[in-house]
Image (cartoon, rainbow, N blue to C red; front, side, top):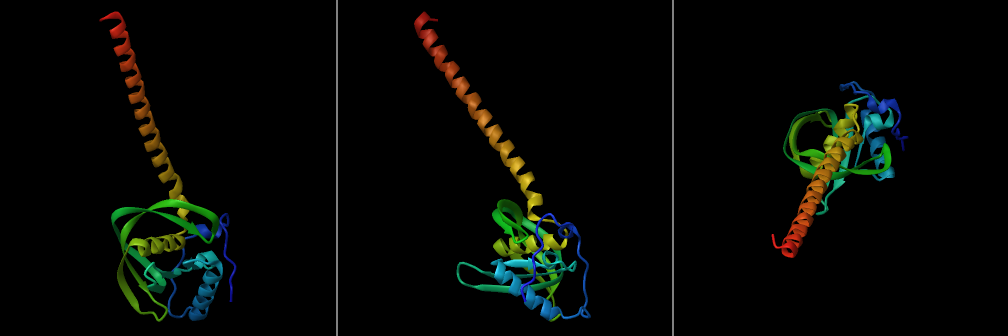
Length: 189
């Protein structure tokens, strides 16, 4: 069954989600509906808050360029550690349609979670999978990827401004130097 996806602006997306236990009713039915919804929306991840449930659950299905399939359910996940170098990658979100921006995230994570059979895992992920997991994890923490956009853009704008300003100063100095050389040759200073 296709479920409606909550769109940006709804305060529900800003709520921190609660843990669930094995007694949660119809968890497998919910997970199947989440996959159907994600496929319909052409996404690679979907979290419970995006469909109106304030529980710590998200799903991912991703096929990499080698056609290797990664499909996983994360129940009550906790990111234990984020580390490594920063990756900047383009991200979008089913709850924020038509917005794609560069976001900075750590390359490696260690995460603890349960799968749909309540088997507990502690795993390391890196690269694109790490980014996808961090994106979905942010949803259950009441955060959205756009929370990171303005900080990054401000840094880039400031760096770009400083670079342009320094180039402008060099250009001005070179013009002054050329003027000095012309002036010197004319007046034999």
